[in-house]
Structures are given as C-alpha cells and as structure tokens.
Amino acid sequence: MSLQQIIDTAVNVEVNRSKLVAQTISRSGRLSTASRNWANPFRFIITPKPVWTAAEYRSVFGALLDNDKYLPHGFYLNNIDPTTFQADLGNSWMVNYQGNADANGNNAIDSYAATSATSGAMICLTNANSTTITAGTYLVKDGDYIRVSGYRAPYIATADVVIPTAATAISGTIQPAGVTVLLEPSVTGVFPGNNVSFVSTTTRTSITGITSTAGLSVGQIITENGTNTGSFGGLTYIAAIPSPTYIIIQSTTACTSGSIVFDGTGPTSTPTVCVPIHRGFIGTVSTNTAVLVGARGAQFVVNVAKLPQVRYLPGQLVELTGDIELIEQIL
Image 1 (cartoon, rainbow, N blue to C red):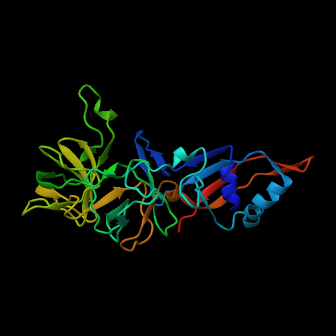
Image 2 (image 1 turned 45 degrees about the horizontal axis):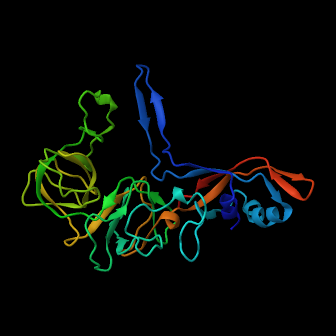
Image 3 (image 1 turned 120 degrees about the horizontal axis):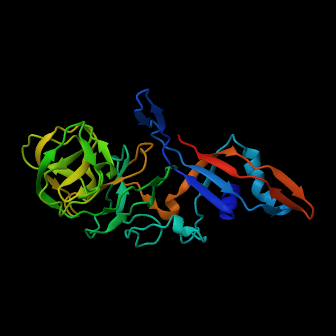
C-alpha cells in the first residue's frame, strides 16, 4: 500500500498518456510523423507531500525504497472504498464513470461483459445475462476509464457508446484505401486544413452517400444486407459519425470498396457493441468477462523511474526533495 498512500496524499499527480511520436523533416521541408508504440504506456509524475513524520516515512516509504526500480507497484489513480467501490478522495472527479449502465453502483457495467472478439483498439461487449436493456443507454462516455476484470491494463474510451437502435437497409459506398477522410464535419467558410483527417486503409475507412444516419451510433456492429459490390471484412463496427451523410468504420480484416446496403444491430437482435479505446488491447479475453469502469477501471501496475532524495530534519521529520516518476509496466 505504500505507493497508494503516497498518491492519496500527494500534492500533485501528473498523468501523461500521449502517444510517443517521432518526427523527421526532409531536405525539401516535408514533415513526416510516425508512431509505432501500440502499448502507449501511461507515465506519471507524483509530487508527494514534502514533510513526513519519521513514523509515517518508515511505514509508507519502506516498501517503495526496498523495491526501488526493480519490482512493479500497483495503485488506483483514485483510491476506492472497499465496500462501496466508489472513489473516496477529493479528486474523484478524475475517474468518475459517466455512463448510466451501472445501476448497482459498484463501478462495473451491468448486464454487458467483454467477449473474445475484443482485439485491436476496441473492447467488444455483449449482453451477458439476457436482461432487457433500453436502447440509448450509455455504456460508456468519451473519457471513461474501462478495464476488463482480471487484466492489469486500463483503457480510456474515445467515444460515447450507447446500446444501439436497430437500423435496416442503409445504403452507401465503402471508400477504398488511400482516400482522405474527415474526422470532423466540413464547415462552410472554414479552411479545409482546419478539419482533422486521416488517410483510409482497407480496415479503417468510410461509407459515404448515406441518406440519413438515423438509427446508427458509434460502436454499433454493422452487417451486409443482400448482395453488394462492396463488402465488410470480418467484424465491422461504426467508429465515428462525423456527419449525417457518412460514417467511419473499422473492420478486423480488409473491406472491399464499392456500393453496399447494410443493417445495424439493435438491443434485441444481436445486442453487441464495440467500445473504441485509446490504445491496442493487450491480451486475449474469455467471453462473459466483467468490465470495470470509473475508480475500479483506473488501476495501474508501474515501475519507478525516479525516486526523490531524502532530507532528515530536527523534530523527527523527513523531507522529500523531489518527485517520483512512474511508467506503466506493459506485459
């Protein structure tokens, strides 16, 4: 518990989950960027309270100093009450679950559990106990911490995901690889360069020419309806809906470009959704594995990268003269 106690009483906790990106500039001035860090570990800088009593110092820092930089430590970003499972400190707003699929209040998603289809940068959830769930219920919201029970690595949802409403016979055109796709709607009078975009691949692309996106939602699994020129590759879900006329899709294997008619799953047909997450999922999940959110989701295993110096003061006091730096251990 030593590291947990330090974090619970810290003056400041700095969290860095930015991707590790490399940039190069060619002789012609062209800037190239790349990121190969699939795991994308969290990094922390902890500023502990500066002065401790001798008794506090020995009980709290003993294990931290003994383990040093060799052995991993575990902690919750915000400590939780062992009975209520709720974050019990003043900064609980950092990790609070924003969805409304936790009627039990135990920081676990009700009725929905992770499935073996979980892979890539998504966690696949399906109804685990045949309980009727209302369409439109938020399973997670953008920024929620989410962690599959029994797994050490937490993830952050990158979109609002609801239990979907069934959609039938939606038509459009799957775009080929190499097309620039806008992640934000085009706005009249706004320079195109202001819109965030990506270049499509065979597994991450868009469906354009949709008359209406009514009945569609992020995370919804879509399947082909009839015979089409275009086709989906493996499990395919909606990753974003930037405008009423096109959607962004993610597939587990390559799609074929061309016209397509498709259906979207609903709450009673195949009540399965895919939650987009900020990094690739590590490990293999067994079906019907509980999913933890909020305070229980924000649990980390880290190694110490830097320890503070210690200064002994009169009056049986101990002063720490620096920060503690941590980096998430990825296995």
